[in-house]
Image (cartoon, rainbow, N blue to C red):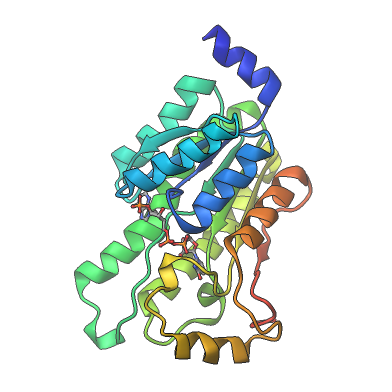
Length: 252
Ligand code: NAP
C-alpha cells in the first residue's frame, strides 16, 4: 500500500485502456507508459500478446498492470474498474477502446452478431464508464475517451451493426460530456479512419490500394497516430464533447 501511494505521488495519473493486448490499445498503453503514466492494460483472449507488452516495457524499466476481463460482460467490466480502484484508489483516465468488427450484408446479420457487436463496442463502454464515473465524480476530476470510428459518423455499407455501435458511442460521448462537465469530467471520442491493425487484416492488398486512393494523405493511419491524440487529450483540460476523427482527410 505504501509502495502504491509512493507510485501515485510520483506517477500521478492512473489510466485504464480496455482491449489493449493488440492494435490501437496496445500502442496507447506503450505510449502512455513510456510517458510516465500509470497504465492498466486490459485483455480478454490474447494473454500472450498482453504479456509481450508487459515484458517489452519491463525491458525499458517500465511496469504496467495487466488485467484479464471480457468487458462486454458487466461483472468483468466492473471488476476491471474495481481492480484499479483497489490498487490505486482512483482512476484519472478511462479509455474505452475494446472493440470487434464484422463485415456482413445487413440481411444476414443474426441476432447473435448484432448483440455481440453492441455488447463489445457499446455496452462495454457503458459498463466501464458507469462504474468509473462514480469515483471520478467523487474526486471531481476525470477523463473518458471513447474509441469510436469514422463509420460511426458516415455509416459503412456491410457494417450496419458496427456503424450503429460506433454512432452510439458518439451520442454517449456528447450526452455524458454535458452531464459530467459540472463535475470536471471531460468526455471525448476519437473516430479513427483506417488504421494498420489486425482489425483490417481481412483486406486484400488490392482493397488497401483502393482505399489509399480515396484518402487525401494517400496512406492508412498508424496506431501511434491515435495514441498521440489520446496523450494530447489527457494533457489538455478544456476539450469535451468532441469527436476527433483521425483519418488522413478521408472524411472532412
Ligand atoms: P484489434 O487489432 O482487432 O484489437 C482489438 C483489441 O480489443 C484486442 O486487444 C482485443 O483483446 C480487445 N477486445 C475486443 N473485445 C474485447 C472484450 N470484450 N474485452 C476485452 N478486450 C477486448 O483492433 P484495433 O484496430 O486495435 O481496434 C481498437 C479500437 O479501435 C476498436 O474499438 C475499433 O473498433 C476501433 N477502430 C479501429 C479502426 C482500425 O482501422 N483499426 C478504425 C476505427 C476504429 P483480446 O485479443 O485480448 O481479446
